[in-house]
Amino acid sequence: MNRLALTTSLLAITLAGCATTTPVASEAPLAPVSAVEAPVAAGPTAAEADAFIAAAEKDLFAYSLEANRINWENATNITDATDAAAAKINAVGTEKSVKYALEAAKYANVQGLSYDTKRKLDILRTGIVLPAPTMPGAATELNTIATKLQSDYGKGKGTLRGKPINGSDIEAEMGELNHTPAEYAEMWTSWHDNVGKPMKNDFVRMVGIANEGAKELGFSDVGAMWRSGYDMPPEQFAAETERLWQEVKPLYMALHTFVRAKLNKKHGSAIQPASGPIRADLLGNMWAQEWGNIYPLVAPKGAGDVGYDLTALVQQKKLDPVGMVKIGEGFFSSLGFDPLPATFYSRSMFTKPAGREVVCHASAWDLDNKDDVRIKMCIKPNADDFITIHHELGHNYYQRAYKDQPFLYLNGANDGFHEAIGDAIALSITPEYLVQIGMLPRSRVPSADKDVGLLLRQAMDKVAFLPFGLLVDRYRWGIFDGSISPAEYNTAWTKLRTDYQGIVPPVERPADAFDAGAKYHIPASVPYTRYFLARILQFQFYKAACDQAGWTGPLHRCSFYGNKEVGRRLNAMLEMGASKPWPDALEAFTGSRQMSGKAMAEYFAPLKAWLDEQNRGQPQGW
Image 1 (cartoon, rainbow, N blue to C red):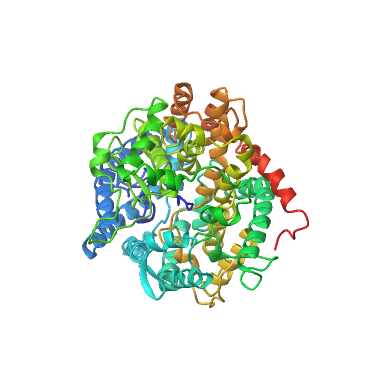
Image 2: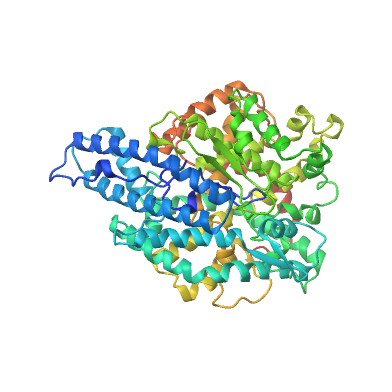
């Protein structure tokens, strides 16, 4: 469960983008505060602050159980009734969470506070995602809008050859290579028109309400509040993410140049020019956030042949959704983690139920703050979902590791940690690992001369995602602080996508469109910088695990499957939850107190050298 669930938006761990799209741990709205409603006397004491925290945590824990159950029912069966129930319970949670935050602020400067009380007061004040102001009806309106936006997304449809197609299926079709450029453009345009544009007015209203709530809590706007949850000042955090981007940007630029040249060769200059930005719908993903689906189009002869196809291996093994999940669980078991409870398999949603609307976006849930962990997916037998399963299980194992912490510490060290754990495991899905679990014959393990192909395939997802992971929140920070007005919503989105990703829409976009709304995390109000941090941290975690396992070969060939010492040290970090500042948790596992892109650069160093050679004479940038 994430720090405090304050709206339906972060109810579940939403997987960030990518072939796996991405997630936060299940968030529960806050409980009624009848036990703590007495006004604070002038000059509150440390003892009173302790009592406030104790009462709040007890109350929140109890309330979260009901809220999690209702939101699970809504996400797995979207109806008017479940929408209404979710909006009602989350309105109460939002209203009470703001009350707790305001109350916590009164104790912030009390002398003699214990470490835990001070930290928990800060968590209460900064942990809100979309705060409602205290004016009557604001919480209800905010949560009604938030629920409606998420449900509208879940029910959204685009078209292919003029026929309606739902969100899960249109995402899959964007990754198929047998469509024409016109068909990709149709799917891209219809999805953005049908899903994004109708949301705009509701989104504008939601931003206005939430900003008023943030100001009551002492923040200039919601974006500043989001950036305050990282154990450093908001301005420092923004600078820190930019520093990390600059560390890995050269790798992205080299990949962009290479892929653009291949797409130009494939489609011709009339479809994809040899210089400038890349057309967004040609990259195998609705949001151009991960490009792995078009790997066959850009894979060069020799170096590009990795020797196997993970989607084909999944299908050859005839793995059903449960079988795919069992393999993911097996990786964690090999590290020494306890098996998942039987209820995980009986209560999770692995496939889209017939005859009802659900939110297919992959997410991980913890409904009782102890052992009732679940995932919610519409699993398809492909490589993307095989990897996504590992990602979501990373959330679940993190949740189980810190389940004995106090309520306000039931979260990752920072939200990037939660996203990175499963991805670090997924990096260990190497050919050798696939041999170990019986999915790949040893005779088909690629030799060292195939490493460039293996790394290129990884980079098409991991590296390609980086600028998108950064810009989604930079866009919303601008909306929240007013530097991006409603009239500029679409032009600002398109400009950021061009500036950071080097992509452009396949067709001219109207100024009154709301293309950002066609990305789940925008209408669901899921902060997105966590996914950027996770892309960086996963390599930092992966390298630390490989070092602990005594790996001496190239970093990208390392698999720590089966290493109990890695599992022991990983669990030691996970079980800390949010009880310590994230540099403490990072240091406990990696030995460093600073997030760094150096491990990612080391992992892809052979590819970067190869790309630079291939790109010689090609125009770089846009």
